[in-house]
Image 1 (cartoon, rainbow, N blue to C red):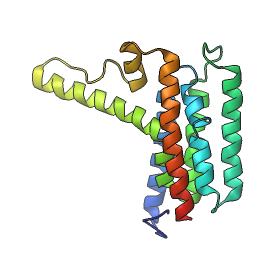
Image 2: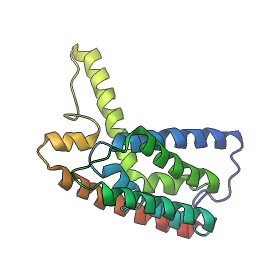
Image 3: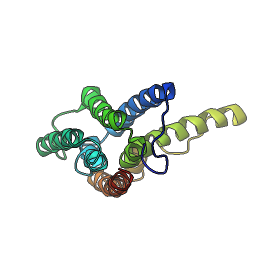
Image 4: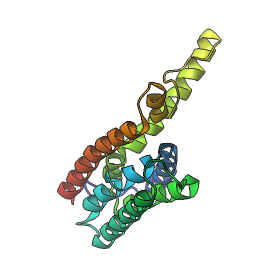
Amino acid sequence: MPQPFGLVYLGKPYMILTAFCFASMGNGVNLTDGLDGLAGGAAALCMAFIGMSVAVLAICPELAVFGASMAGACIGFLFHNRYKASIFMGDTGSLALGGALAAMAACTGMFFPLFISSGLFVLEVLSVIVQVSVMKVTKRIYGVARRFFRMAPVHHHFELCGFREPIIVASAYAISFVFALVAGYIGLISA
């Protein structure tokens, strides 16, 4: 595993961590796939795959090529499916992207860079968890469910606040780009 963990033998908990990564990344990308180009662009252009490719480059160059290929496939998808989308990625595409990201981490032990490079997906999942938790707690306390966000995941909250879809997507790309730079750096210094 990367620094500060170093070489750690996890044994059977490694399988649990791997299963958690596959489930969380698949669902994270799936929840993010709500606006035109948001999931595909965050996975490719803003470098969840590129960040992971850089992170795993020293450990397994072949896996870095796989990540770059997946980024290229997402760019091809975005080229034909930019705003006003004509093709819906759906569960098949989003779950495959999340699974590919998790597979890169599982094969190399780079789980920490995975969660950083996929920070946008993690934020989307956390927004859903917060929304559901707040609604359940307020329903129990007040008898009426109250919302933390207008709608979850958070990109729909921003839509309801009046932001246009291309602005939300571009902002998400910028945030994801920063996460990918940090993940690539952590991966390179830990190899």
